[in-house]
Amino acid sequence: VLLYAVEPTKITRQPDEVLVDIGSVAKFEIDVHVNSSDNPLVQPEVQWYRGNIPLNDNDRISGSKSSILTIRNVRASDFGDNYYVVVKGICGIDTSKPIKLGERPRVIVQPLSSQEVCEGETVTFTVNASTTVAGYTLNYQWLFNGTDLQEGGKYSGVNTATLTITNVSTAEAGQYSVKVWIEDFDQKVTDPVDLVVYTKPVITTNLPPVLQVETGKDLILTVVASGQSLN
Image 1: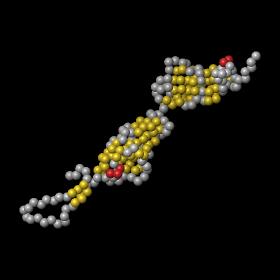
Image 2: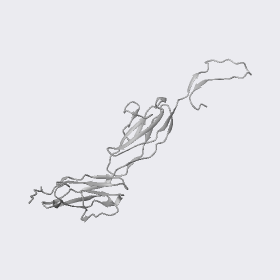
Image 3: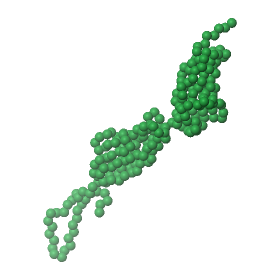
Image 4: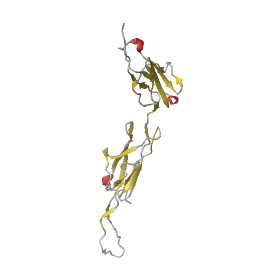
């Protein structure tokens, strides 16, 4: 005669919150005291639930009576925080904590627009960004020619939705983009856009202070200037 000593029925690893994209696969897992090498007569009964309704295997759900529950082709209607599992053994019953199945948050960004300005002006770039799931914080990092910008000097708001460049010069002309992310989840980087900075017109050769011309003769005045789109 064999005598089996069986530990009290207990879930030793609780399932975690599961966040997935719509259309993907969600998987819940638990660990219990009894394993496949033990006496099959003392294997526990497992049943997964949503609310008060026991789940059953179908074309999308499998493992509803095992330690691993799988839901395929997840739909928005599958999301909720009322999943749990009940394990029944010869030494009692244990119920897991409520488990949440939720949508994995994603970042949505709208494209930036290029700008053309003159030296000395103030320039602002603003990114329109949002999340697919409310309640998550968006983080920002603006880039100039692919390199992270640092706060200070002519730049302010490098870690916000709006970048401001004051007293702009040709040194700030180039390509700007912004990285937007949700910590531990998703990240997007906008396509770079151009900042074109036109120099102010500068007269490099001025008129002489005094000109003499004979009566009836043509007077031609000429100056030399630098800058864009001079008239």
